Length: 252
Image 1 (cartoon, rainbow, N blue to C red):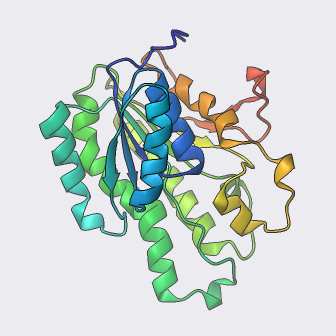
Image 2 (tube, rainbow, N blue to C red):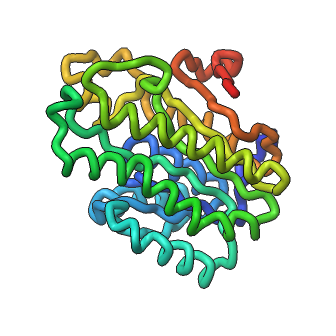
């Protein structure tokens, strides 16, 4: 992999869930290495905070306040990117919500629809809207963020675990259908990271024992690099040690 600090110079990157946590860290890092980053999240104020950090590394971002619940409008994102840039080089699909941790029989229809729509269905809409733009890139790259909950059967995690499991199958099928293109598509499971969602899920956990988003952000870059050859894989960072790349586990 190229190690030039400007290895993403000229690349057009869309990062969802870019207002905080992992999405913000990845967006800032991409910008620091030359990418033109489009920041997507619901909260304008928090997006501006990410943009402030990007300005500190001498770059500017495009802010896209957008609620992924409005899935019927996702096509407009693709249209806007095409009209301005003519292509998309990088997609980091990170946006997700936890939902309520409770028994399946206690989940309300409204909650079921909300979590599935944001964590799963919106990604299908993003794929439909952005696939043509990724194909216009010389080396389109996409990373979808999943979770370790898909590798077990977690009681009370119904909506979140089901939505992430469905996402994984969606992405694997998309990867299979793009095997003969220049696009490389992978899943990344970050493990235990100090984020607001992690705090919501495990309120009694000691945050000092968790990885910071900045620590794992670099692991995204090799998957987004034009020299990446991995495709249709799941990269597991649950045992990740920044000083040891062999701590990264890769699954088919």
